[in-house]
Amino acid sequence: MEFSLRYPKNADRSFNTLTDESVNDLSIDFILDALSDVKYEREHMRSLLVQVTDDPEVIRYRCDVFEDFLRFPRLREAMEQLVSRLADLKDLERFQKDQEGPSLWSLVNRLREIDEYVSCITMIKQTLEELDIRSEGMLALKQLVTDIDRESGFPELKKDIDETLESARRLRSITIGVNLDGMLRPKSAGVISLNDTEFTDSGLMRRFMSFTNKKDGLHEGNDVSGFKHFHAANPVTVEFKVAAYQKSAVSNDIYIDSTPTGSDGLSNAIKKPVSNIMKKTCDDIKSTLKRYINISGYMLIGLMPEIIFYVRWAALVDKILATGMPMCKASILPPQDRKCSFTELYNLKLAINKTKGESINIITNELNFDENGRIFILTGPNRGGKTIFTQAAGLAMMMAQWGIYVPCKSAQISPCDNMFTHFPADENDTVDLGRLGEESKRLSEIFEIATSRSVMLLNESLATTSVAEGLYIAKDVVKAMRYLGARSIFNTHMHELARSLDELNGGVEGDSRVESLVTGVQKGSRSFKVAVSPPQGVSYARDIAVKYGVTFAQIKDSIDGKQEGHTDKDR
Image 1: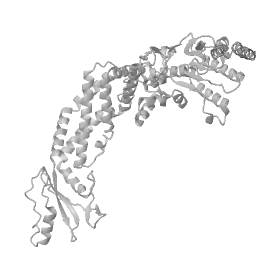
Image 2: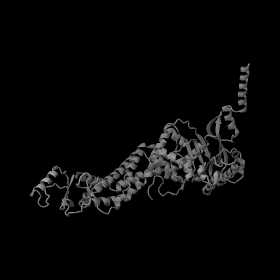
Image 3: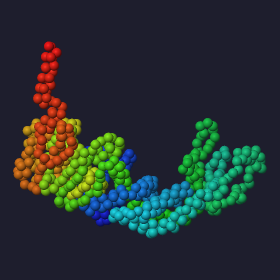
Image 4: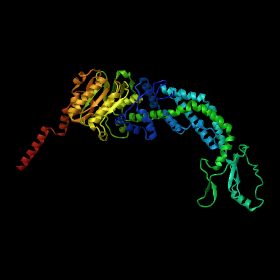
């Protein structure tokens, strides 16, 4: 099984997938935009973020790997450089697909590529050796690149590449013989020699004209002795039909079309003889590369998405920590315990906005899922932070399971096997069933696949019908949550639901207790603090009314004051 920085050796790699609704409600795309502005990086990371595993060993493995990335900015720099280099070498498998000897240009380019790859391995090996990495994953990577370096004969391979490239760099000119037809048009050509000096005679046209003007000006035969050969001329004259003729746009001259890649008629003539000349070198290198690539090539390229994932998350966590907000490594509990505890929890999205320079006073809260409460009915005033808190809980759990530091001071979680959200739907999606029908259908679909180890986050669900109808359905939904045993937050304006705790806890068997959470108001202002407490109901309205002076007593005093003022004026 291929090496991974997200799964320990021999681990079960099965996972569940976040629903599209959960991805949207948790604002995954907003987070991805904060992680990277490179499209393909976001796509790679998104594919990893939607995967949910509840295997404690896998999650601990990820947490430890991420911590190494976070602890060592130098490691992130080296790994990012590795990714950048590997991005240009994804087509290494073409070495194995080549059946013919490569042309000189192709050989040189490929030697440069493999030279770059050797440098990548060497660079990451040296970096890992110099840092105090501790995670199982990074220590395994260190051993892996060490083995690659040793078993692949890097010193010998590097020496061969350097020597071959140096030889290639000495090539300065090629001597080509061209046969002409009766109209002096090239009809065939062949490579005569490769030379280590440039051809400097600039009187070509003058010589040509003198040859055509003198009967004895033509060179007798085809002897070209006197040239300094870099390689011996190919013993077999290789000819080709020159096909790349074009008419000049400004004259009737005929010329040979040439491109920077050498893909023209003359280059094709050069390809085979050059390949024959360098055949042994090519074959030796290809033989070595095939063995080398089979060992390590695909493995390192396969790590690119994982490396990007850790590098980008570590950079974001660093930015958040720099704002003074706490972040921590989660302690992972057995999944069957269905516990979860956060201190000084806050919403990651708010922290991201803070890193962008927004002046935000982020309020932190506590949250505990355990035998004293696994299902919370969350009530509070409009714009009191209920949705922000609900989303914060979901993101914190997911981040812990991704292996990322969590936005809180301390965290302990029993991993969930999946997370299901039920936030208000777009009205365009409710045309056929109506809003209530659509919401009910989605809830039914969640219960079909959720388990006791799942997490369910409901935000203003069933609020689009009458209070009586919504309350009737909501009570049954909460009873089903208790019976299932899933950890849940039901964010709602139905205070009566939160007042029905005895009915909900006593009306159905289950070990998941239903409790009431409230977001607070202090002196008429929203505090955004969340606490276990009975629903406040009209007390919120009373606080707001007092703050803005709209109680009957305040309005009456205002009216009486105005009337008294008019009476005095009349006098």
